[in-house]
Amino acid sequence: MNVGSMGVLEYDDEYFMRIALEEAKYAFDEGEVPVGGVIVCGDKVIARGHNLVMRLNDPTAHVEMQLITCATDYLGSRYLQDCTLYVTLEPCVMCAGAMYWANLGKVVYGAADPKRGASTVGQRLYHPKTEIVSGVLESECSEIMKEFFNSKRD
Image 1 (tube, one colour):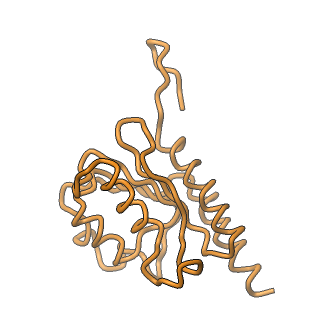
Image 2 (cartoon, rainbow, N blue to C red):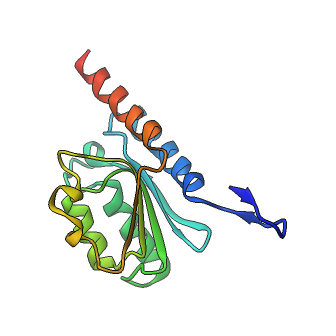
């Protein structure tokens, strides 16, 4: 968050990614893979959450899926072209497909997922008009994942 030349608060990608990281910490504490996210419309967070796969015993309960459902319900529209999704880990193929159908305007993620991330099959999974930004607070987003999986190995 910055103060602009007119004295008005200006929010940036790092500001919203920090909120997503807070959500990832909640997931970590609950024994979920620590992926958190938010959907922003204008400068307003309209959805926030984290993975619920273990709690719901549902392999599709990724944070992105939860956020899309929440945001479309909030807006009363199945399209999110004026929204940005911030997520701590690169979306998987399933989530990228859902983002395609929701026509998300922008996706910002922190850590890359070289094994399961959507980029392993190329940008064609995202809607052609969706802007993709990667690497925002990448080290913090990667660190929480490493810490989680190291704790599982101990």
